[in-house]
Image (tube, each protein chain N blue to C red):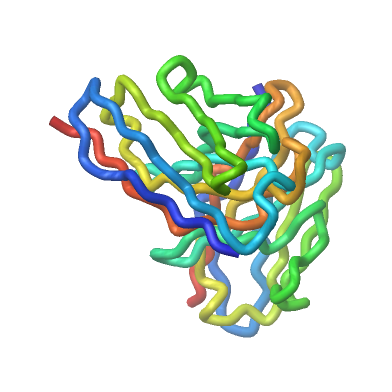
Length: 108
Length: 120
């Protein structure tokens, strides 16, 4: 079955760039969506269809998807970016929603 | 847009619970609806989906045969009947809106969740 692989954690200092990846076999052929979950809060959509931002999400958050890796990039990292980030695709093998394991972003 | 879950609580293994989700602020039957859960200190796990008209229902393998999803579009409500509960069902259960009537579309709005604890 299809698997999405995320690193358990990444860290970045304020003002630096954080890169969060989501690996999957030929994931570039799928649409990838990203959700941010701050501590104690429900998830929030931050990126859809690889690189489209919902209203209210700052431009310093961007997404891309190619080959076997989708990437969520956060430039000029701020304390408010500290959260768990989950990638998600539609698993065509099983016709269902599939999440990656999540990456905890720590702002140093 | 608002999604408010209810019905969580403590249940013994083998018992049942029924979760409800009341939607407001949007046209309920314009959207697929999902249940997604998150175990203690765990990631997100998709549980179940209901098509816009409730005619197509799907379940994760971990709950198939035990959980039943349904919706009442006249009451803007989504339900999850949880039978034969197991300790591993312990989680925060989120009611989540799909962006459109397509099951393949992204999940664009999440409720705050209702906590289910299965323990003797």
